Length: 197
Image: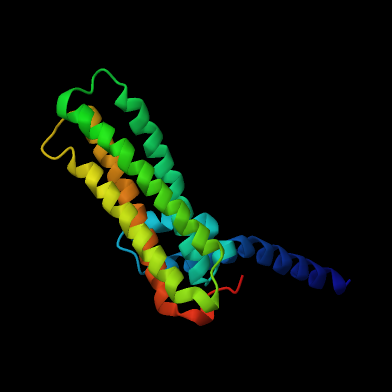
């Protein structure tokens, strides 16, 4: 008779713990991504785009930099596809048509630079870390410049399609800026946190 209340109390405690666990796990994941994104200029966008990597990246600057560049590549490819379709759109005329054509070219270059960056991030080594960081900074910065060049081509222009392009390209620029900040954080954190792969 005396065991029943204890059993019920134990079950109630167990159920309460189970209900709290997902919140604790979510809270831990959120703290990892918030900590990583604290160095970026566009923190909300960083948190939104990188939260799925929290459980694997945790506190690794190398993994966060790799996640940042991966997300940037995905977003840049999506926008490049949009630009490719708009290049052939008959509503794009004159200067805007030329600007879209230029954007297609600079986005191809940006995607190449980002792919090279991701390749380096996948094979970081303590012995070559400084040179690798130099390459990463150069290539991610170049991708950001390419995206800025695309936006500049529409300066002073108006219209629904122009606004769509500008907004989508600016978003890629913000995500690229975040990736660069994560690369810089990796550079500052030094050799001891670079995986020896």
